[in-house]
Image (cartoon, rainbow, N blue to C red):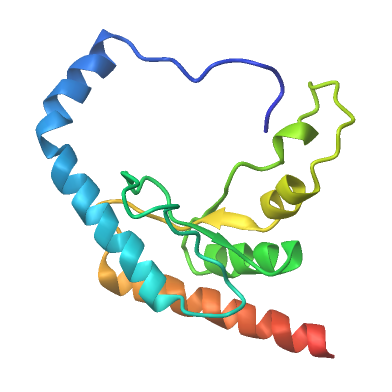
Length: 154
């Protein structure tokens, strides 16, 4: 929940020291996340789910997130509920659209941003996310999408 303008800069000397201690691991962590990112793209091969890709071949990606765009906000909500009921925590991605933050005094409509913000979520990525867990997550997502399609057809 966003309530006011601020920054996300809360680092201290201890944070900096931990960062320096972990710096030698960064290349391997990015490589492992790349593998997770690509595995999700292989596992969730569904025409109803968009998995954004880096914009160009020379784009230097850090693979910090693996967002997916679902066909509707209802599909997103049911998918997140299905994941949560199975013990998987996914999160909304940059929600709500920034023009909808309550402390901004804009009435400017941003229909593309609003649409995507209502349908995008991030898949879990960390050292704890194994290929087997990714397979389970992908199966849960595809089950949820298939169920949402059946409901929409009724």
